[in-house]
Length: 568
Image 1 (cartoon, rainbow, N blue to C red):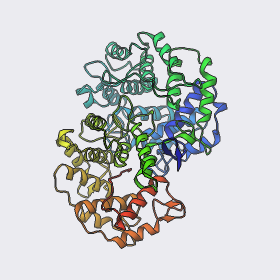
Image 2 (cartoon, rainbow, N blue to C red):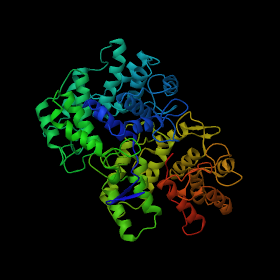
Image 3 (tube, rainbow, N blue to C red):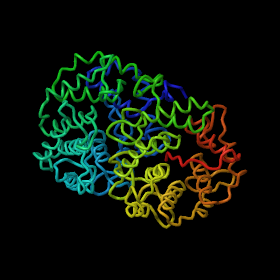
Image 4 (cartoon, rainbow, N blue to C red):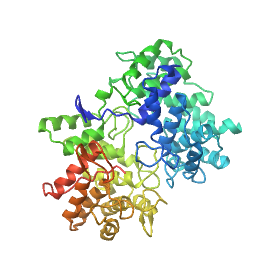
């Protein structure tokens, strides 16, 4: 863990940043100059799971987002992805019959459908399972205003966004490369809506409701227009606006007033200039030099210099469990509060990217915005807007619902003292929880295998809705004789499951077997910190250390409860 200015980070590579850096260098024609190329290839390959998909980090489950970014980045730098036959098989498990979900069993959304359609056709060289059904699903994304939405149900309520437009159009284009099918929308209306998002300044907004134009919205809007053989109403104003966002080094910032020349800003700026046929040579040297500064020593990239790349989860972990003085704790909370930026009300994992539910939960649990009613109200409104038509919540805007994110959203409302009935549709919320239920318990998404953590998270949601949600039998089924609790079965305990089990028992007023839990903690104690499982040889990093420290304090009686932190 590294103390960074006012925040804390690990200095490790990030997958989204790595994709953005490699794609930008490919656009500039400078892949041969990519810093740490061999290490970056190894970093990307290491994310592949045995099922053929890729994960955001080692040990996590495969998802469509990580699979797209890993395979695209490898191809950009001349390294062909391995075991694409397995990747194709895994992607078929995410097919709903009409479109793709981010995970097997998850309801499809346009993020996942874009990622997987392009991975299937371009990387796996296979057709989608049913092109006609996918085309019909894409058609149903268009709302009355003309733009595209995250899902067909979002189209019914007009939840439109330039990102959804881009992902929908690019999914169609991947299909059309094989079939030459025309766009399945009212194209003049779609083009008109996209053009209407151009601000008088020249940049684009995500939608009419957005606070300010930004480079991410601008790249997605211009990209969607270009794929439809169209252009902004005022391309020259767009170019001039982008060039005004060059920072001190000559690379780019995402919007006026945010002075970090991060990887996403240069990715979006270069991508947009390229689409508008603007020569890249005048910016190429500065952008390439800046990206070189963002390379991590072991391969991959982060959003800014690794020694300065703070993030919300690591910072929250230090506030919650670190041995730091009150002044430093207050300073870290202020940094977390600065991760609430324009256009979205939640907390960003790294400043300059989208707001995320889990990061918002961790930041609030760490005391951010404790005395700022305006910011707290903004977060509550964001949670209300984030609820999906199926009643659940995804990890960020437009993502399909899952139990982790749904329980996190409900816990955020608890920390904000905002009753769910005043903020979200509780009937739909209860239906989503029910949709994840089987006779054997609750899974993370509909149709998923039941697990301990999904069951405990479902119980927290139902309890917040005033429903009886007994957990004693669930805990007994996953209790490991030698200490701790297992997410699946009752053989291999893990830190997250044991943490959530003690949290759940406290809230339910159940007796906690302190010695049983302490035996588990001894089994994950390492010289460098806390491991995620007894079988893991090394400490798990700042988040594992945070969970271990909080759990130790709870079992020792130094605190009376645990914060409802969630990761998976």
